[in-house]
Image (cartoon, rainbow, N blue to C red; front, top):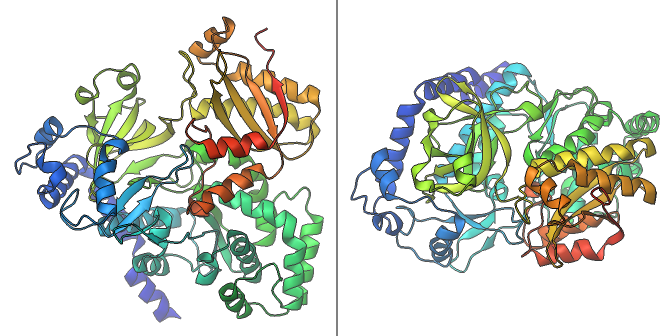
Length: 580
């Protein structure tokens, strides 16, 4: 046993990882220059970079003077050519062999993003650094992780490149397994469950595997907080069936995928004693509070991305978690990684991310200048030039063919770790509810929903999920907010919720527009139970991975299929009288 532990330590030395991180962040400015130099040396001969007249120069000043700031639309034709099989150096010196798909939940269609070995390396660097800091505060011993992770199918593009969600590309990479094995606890579920073709069957088996290894589970995690909440909401529905499976040692007939059934048959043995224990624990819980530590008593923490569009799920997650700490995972996107959570004790609402200066070249557009339409070319500042308390949009350059690429995320500078900034995620830039002079962000919407949701507390009801849409089919346009509730509420209560939503948008442009009826009365639309599950199914049907699903908080006008799902499931509708 001792020898095995020593082998693991040789593979993964947490203190060495932290030491390396300290060196990187102390020299953030120099590392940034070297990183850009390396990116441009590797890719300077590409069609994209040659057109901007760098002429082999790799310094920051020339790069910023010559290469424009772009969005995905600008690079899309180049990426499409690569996906279609163009083998010439279009965006990168080395050929791209894999494409990542962004979640695509807002506009209804996923974006193609190049993925390569360098991005895989930075993923592993982020995972290792994050784990090292996390394990220092919350050490885990020999045990298992109950991970609600799912992999979508990879498919081939027209040019024969493997394409899948970013999480799928990572999970299917041999380096991922090797790194996870070296540094972390093994997962409860066999590969057949993770890579299963049916999400519901995989989820059922994840829960079953967790129960089989209930004493060994030390971490409960998923990519996003939503997946953990969804898993335990499902547990409430299926727990008695799970108990029967454990009692008899036979897998439920609801699982039909042969490979999953075979893998589970190797784990599942009759265990009446465990079945009785789970039954009595579930029966004695009050409204499922503290379900996770009750089922898995040795769990140290719950882990996943809990910021941004995941914040609305924290209340329910805390309900299931009881006293267990919630640890927010690192900050990245389909395009690449940005920062690592080096303060795991911070609650998710306060979490910050220290930027790793060697995984890309970072620039920051000051937000005020950006919002009032000034020329963006003269405004970005470098990683070490950002100011405490200011908000910025991230622009980044990576090793996979994205140059001065606007990520679309707004962040606030909350501090510095040595020479690198610690960022707090604020919102997505493009998720603005806007009709007239109003500008409401995802965070503004979330706060409005939280305020209005308080009217449901006395009825013991909650908002299961929500989204919004700017309805400009009539004049004036108005906001439509869609809610799925945990039960039935009276018309009187829901009218109060509707008025409260309308009054809770505090943006001056919105309030003044409502007062003069330049924006119409807000509509609250209640949808059938299970509507947001239909949205998830629709997303998965398009080739998305459940692990990467984020409920779109604002459904764009082009996303007609989602608007159709929502509209066809509305059971009640209320118009605000708050400004009458």
